[in-house]
Amino acid sequence: DTTASVLINALYNLTSHPAVIQSLQKALGVACPDGPVSWSYNAIKQISLLDYVLHETLRLAPATPGGIARLSPKEGLIIDGIYIPGDVVVSVPMYTIQRDERYFERAEEFIPERWAKEGLVHGADTSMEAYNPFTRGTCLDNSCKGLY
Image 1 (tube, rainbow, N blue to C red):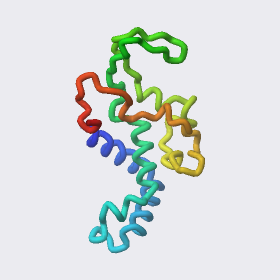
Image 2: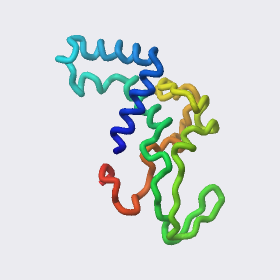
Image 3: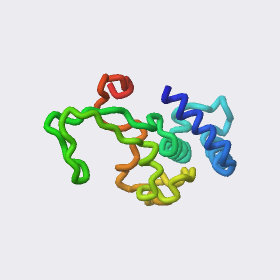
């Protein structure tokens, strides 16, 4: 289950980085000043750090780390100068791509702030071509219910 995977990895990353937990607790305290009774989606959706933590978690531990198999178009296609024939099953290993230093500076480190809008700090690939935690394209067997 992708949701469970993301939550487990997010909790692992947070418990491994106490300074991030403290920042998140502070932001939650501001958004929900009365504690759990003031908790609501509208109250927390403005907490950017929460989004950053989830994006960084998905970058380091994508829900589909090996990629999902896709079928190339019947006419084939050219990717980075390489011809891929039509009707061929292809896959991109997201775990490997999203930890590549060509796209993310200090790629093995958990740095949620890299997702800040202020210029995408810490070397995040500004084109976002390397960040596809749930992949792109059409599932071969339409198993991605969240996409339909």
